[in-house]
Structure formats: C-alpha cells, structure tokens
Length: 373
Image (cartoon, rainbow, N blue to C red; front, top):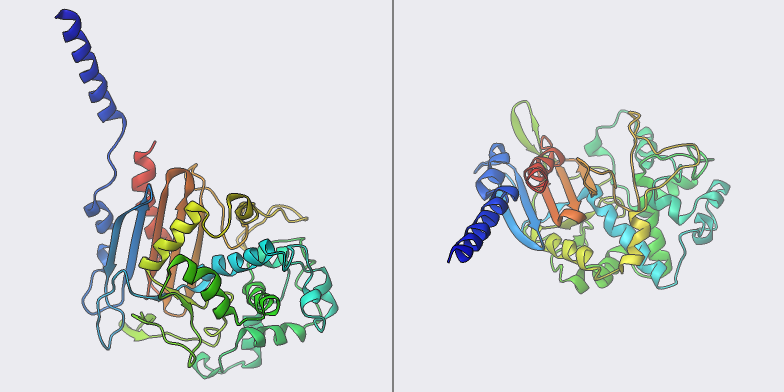
C-alpha cells in the first residue's frame, strides 16, 4: 500500500511539474487584443490567421472591405498581396527548374536576346535573390512623368518593365556583388515564366499552383481581364478621413506584387509549404538558402544585415528559425511569418496604409515563442 501510494504521489507530482513547465498556448482573447485598434464597422481593417501545429487556432476579420458597401472583412476576403506575391513568382521558377525547362544559372540574355549586354552577367538566381543589380523600374517610370500626379500616370505591365530596362545602358552594380531588393527582378522573372512555359503568367500560376492546391479564389489580377471575388479595396487616411487608394501606376505589374488572395486560400498555401506538396524538401532548399554577395554580407539601405533566399526573407527572430515576407503597395499592407521549427504561421492582410502587419504579427509570435521556451 505504501509503495502504491508513493508511486501515485510521484506520478501526481510529475504531472503537476509538467503543468508548470509547459505554458498553455495564448487564448483567442489575447490575440484579439493585439488587433483591437482595427475593430470597426465603417473603416478598413485587416484579416488575421494563426496556424499552430497544422491547425487553425485563430482566424478573424476586422473592419470593412470598402467604404461603399461596408462589407465585413472575413476569411474569404481577397487582398492585394503586394510583395507577398514574390514567393509565388519564385515557386513558379522553381517548378520550371524542376521540370528541366530552365536552370538557376541561366542568363537573362538567353531568354531575351535583345536585352542589352549588361544582362549577359545576370542569372535567374540573381533575379531570385535580389543580386541582379537591375535598375529600379519604378524610378525610371516616374522620372518619365516628372511632376505628374501618380493617379494620372498610365499603368505599366511586366512587359513594359522589360522595355524600360532594355533602354538602360547598365545595372546599378555587377550582378552577384551586392544585395538590393528589386521589384524589377521579379517582374522579369514573371516574363521568364511566360517565355519558358508559353503561357501568360497568371495562367501558369492558376494551373501549376492555385488549382492543384485548391486555392479557388487566388489570382493574378489584370484590370479588365478578370475579377477579384470578395475583394478588399486599399485605403489611405488623408486629413483625418479615409480615401480609397486602390491602384497605382505599378499595380498592373504581376511578378512583383499582383496576386490577390485570402486567409482561406493562404492556409492551403501554408499547408503545401509544410507538407512539401508542390516542391520536395530538397527542391525547396535553394529558396531557404541565404544569398552571400561577393562584396560582403547582404545589407538593407540602412546598413542592417539581411538574409534572403528565393522569395523569402530568412532572418531569424528571437533565436527562432524564420521565413517571412512583407507586402506594401498603395492602400495595402501584408505580412507572413513562418516559424518552421515551432510549427507556427501568422498571416496579417490589411487594406489600410497605416497598418503595420509585421509588428502585429510579431506580437502574436511573441505570445507563442515565449510560451515555447
């Protein structure tokens, strides 16, 4: 009896110790509180998704899709992803590489022979990891319309980006020598997808990524050619009032930021990344390998070190391995934070320019990463 009692007490003590050693996951109220400032029935807001251990633990909308209908944002609302798009552009290139249709060390002029001589040293890999040195097409475009209000500047397409770059005599630096975030590079990657596959970029995305994964409402938006269901419109606050600011001169460029998607569909994308549905773990490895420029560590314009693969920032956070990306365009701010070792993904999509989805997502991450220590 005494021995049995001792064992029972010991097991009880172990269970109690375990209770104190492993903190519970944060409550929905704790997460919801982080987004309290976005709650509104008459202002733009955001959609938030938290996936933990392959299970959706938080999914909520805040605010409205637009100021005309005032429909509530929910898991089906489609937001312009902006640069969040780049991971899909990179995946398209990686699928073609797996198919043997191209190689990461192929050069730009092999796809576009008419491109100036400076393209001979630029590889697909340089385009993917932002070491191409291509001039910034947005700067070139706006210089052509100096003094013209942005809303009066005609929208440019990916093909137009290539034409602008073909007029330049050289890059900003030798390919591979430095790191500089490049929207130009990802617009060119979309054109490479079209050239190699023989299909429009949006069609390739639909057939090779979105349809296989069941992402039924995700698309590369082309004004006048397709429609975005359950669409959120971008907004900016001016003189204390909200104004719809949904399109800019560069909003029609697809490769660097033209995809619309929702929490519902992005949960499927996250699952595909976790299960290696589209690309095997080995095939994904180049995307998760940080670039090492020839002239030294990759740095932001502010001088901070940065790690970047193919369509993903790879900088760790609080000692945790991470893959992330932000998106920012007129009226929209988006962010995805994935912590593979912690089985944690946080996605925040906002249709208001004053939101900081990365800061908000990391506040959510802090709740989980602290409890996992």
